[in-house]
Length: 454
Image (cartoon, rainbow, N blue to C red; front, side, top):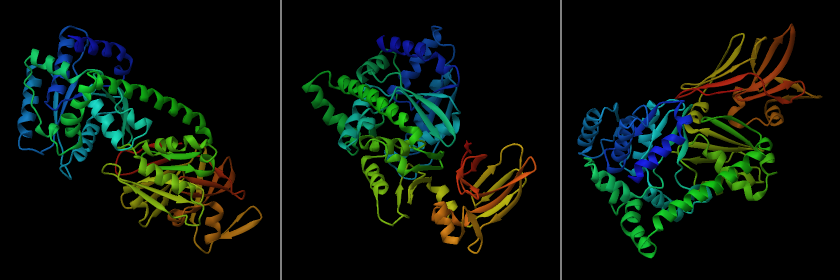
């Protein structure tokens, strides 16, 4: 059948990417995912692919039939020689959004870097997603909807989502499932008129299809074209990236230089903010948030402690403005940094220790840390021709309010020559010039896997 041929071509084109990680398949037991699993089984039996994907079934515990669905997938997997893992999750709220976030968090506990997760999204799903984002006021990136290949970051991991059937219509998958007698389950919530996607599926798309029988395929095609446009915009932003000086330790911290940001053409500002917020995020930022961040960037008053909170999935993000910098923290990391901090050091590293978070700075090889002193309100530090204390020192360094209690003065020896530095989390200044510099390796030990940055 045509959809089997399309999957075979997709595997052929994906050989290089599939060679670097393990292959998984998200299988709910519904028609689409079971059809994709069976198509993989057929290709494996025909010798087209040399391994079957590992089936991952997420048990939400949402409905009473979830046990039956998990049992169906497990038994079907055994019958067709698939390895299968049942992943149980606990939902904070019984909503589609929380269920989706819980699924990806469950997948993230299994998948490792460069692994690939097969998803059975098809053209009808794509059309529904485009319409949902259209009525929410999405831009080019949002309207490009789902991608065939999409990098997914959770903590320090990055794996791949693969949707080889995005151009395949639901009817073709239904015919394929019926032809092979697949024992799939129907989730009644998918067609519920209590959720937006259900209304679009049952009421809106049928009307559009009457107006144009190719409406669903055409919407999916438009999404692909918008995806190409979004990539062009992304490349344009990357061309300006050297001028947007930022310190990044995703997903925990990112700092945007506002003066450099404002040198970009104004027409690129919204796309740049979207890109800056989205990296390492679970969800895509909406237009309202981008407008709020843009307003925060463009403020000219003296309120430098303005903050925005963004509920990015279950983690949340805190966005802060201080003077000419915009700071973004994952919210649980932000909360840790608001607590009292212990500062520890040895000859090659310095550590800021909060209750549930440690930030480590390791000095370059050949250097030795011989003295560390926390800078107090009464300490005087000479920078250039001037001596600064307390608030004046913090202002001279442009140090954010929430990091001022963590400022230290260092003495480092290299080849019997000592040098003086000031240091705060993710920031280092030379003494006596006061110039900011970049040296050593920073590492967060946060609520999930650490991520390094030099």
